[in-house]
Length: 355
Image (cartoon, rainbow, N blue to C red; front, side, top):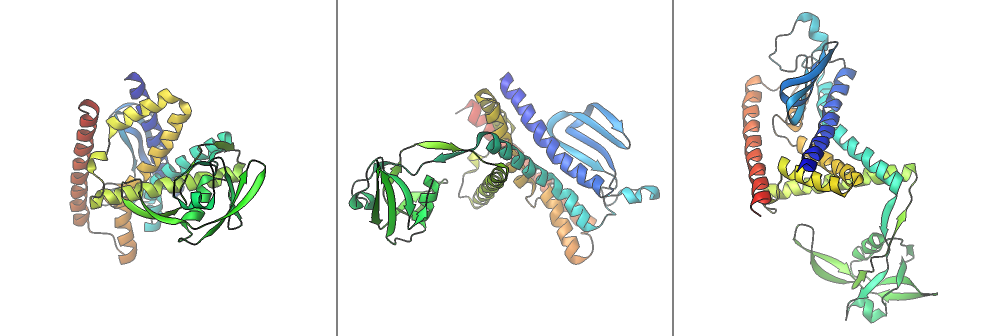
């Protein structure tokens, strides 16, 4: 339990710091004054005031905030502070300040993935045949266990994913498959067949296969700085895309809300990853950081995405959204977040104590 709590504090602390530091840095870049930079909510535990900013650690470690000068549209501001006011900055600058939080969470993930890829390289599953399904196109053509597929239609392949992508894009057209068998190189013509399988979400999908499974043989490929950066960007994009799909399927009801987890689930998972090693915990931080970025970009008032929506409307209309509309929207947003918090805590308690 102590490991889970400590790991949870580390994970949440890193995520909150990067998120709020993004807001803070861009706000200061555009000359906006910052009254408070807080890790946590509630009563101030410790801190230090530098200039006009109170850097503080607060009692409730479930979030954080940056309080800027003139952040509320109806706030009374001393005329001398108008140059520091968030509300009085151009809408484009306000958009960038708000978007900086989620962006820095994505940046954190890229930095972590970059370090992992640069130090450890990337894991590559070889296009080596582990088994051949009876009656499949591969068996009919003559493929055997142990064959290493080296090219498809003249395109060299060095990983199972590359091979599967080429087969999947065939639309059933016969492929020229080149394999290495012991000391020989052999060529086969194999027409993929269309089969029904299930994706990550248990949905039936159609795809083309030739009827082989991987041997499981793999190797680690070292990456230079440019390759590591490219892989880190791809990995961040893939995780973000998956998160967007999951949220969309939760909204449409294609995925049960029982799968949603909250702080207790994160603490449990963080503890498990910490026990598995520091590298696992760091990788976990990257994944959660991406999730936090995507969730914060949802167009729900009180979240960054809600503020961005209001600013986008302002940019189009040429005037801010009325204060009354914003207040009603904020109340609706708080109600939605309250319902979500109740749901995730219920799921966490049910999963941990009654499963």
